[in-house]
Length: 194
Length: 165
Image (tube, rainbow over the protein chains, first blue to last red):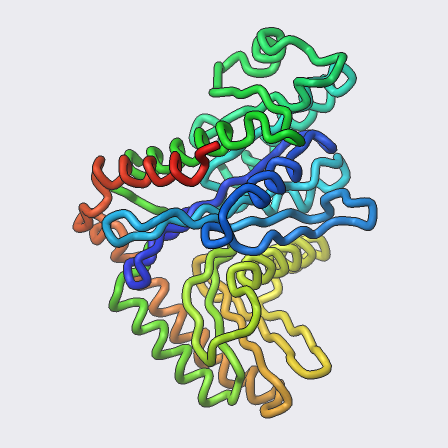
């Protein structure tokens, strides 16, 4: 839920990274955090288990330069991918302005992608939302895996709507910025046109 | 033109801050913070804090949201207030209208009873301001044309700058 504060002259938007467990959502945010200049980013907050699995969420605030006297902030969140953390996933979606689906290209994780997409639809429905209403971008991560399914096939099976999608190797930063740029611009456009 | 789901105008901001300022003094709290349930910081009143306020707002919202879900699980509509007790600093969170949350930080210089008492009045006043703000959002949004195509293009250029490889 974007918030415009006319007094402090700020616009705040919320982007959520969604997808199957161990798909690379946290890795995306960590890469962004590592690469950006200190003045443009806030603290990276991670609520993880001892095994470094996301328990509740990761959170990273980003700040863009001023335009017409207004500062724009993007708050990036990841959700826990593991199936049994659905309650946490659902509540992170509250007030979402844009969603990045980080899918796992591996053949062995194909079903996990399907399950995560269904779960995303279900959880959005609880907020009376659907993917058609929210800026949505897909990233097919782990393109370097030996059993990676070809992009065309992934899109045909899991992205028949033809949402913008990117190849990713998040550990190397491949596709990370392109994905984020795309969703951030869509969020802005949505703000302008709605 | 940008149309956010909600916006705060100058006069509302000051009305909110007056209530927060009054609460801070009357409850002898160390800090008062207003956030929305998506984790955005709305306003803060009190001395400059030595922790990251943005993270604080995000975690408070998650805390409130998790407790809301817990309340539903046990058959409650919600928990309208939450209390976290620390050895030195404690926190009292209260639900305001339209998904806004008031967070009061206080130390041993006051008591939970006094904080609770003062928060009750502040919640009523803030409810009124926020409800009124939402009522006028519909037509007031039309008046702001700062966010035209030029603005969007400007921010898009900033996005390209920020994420330049």
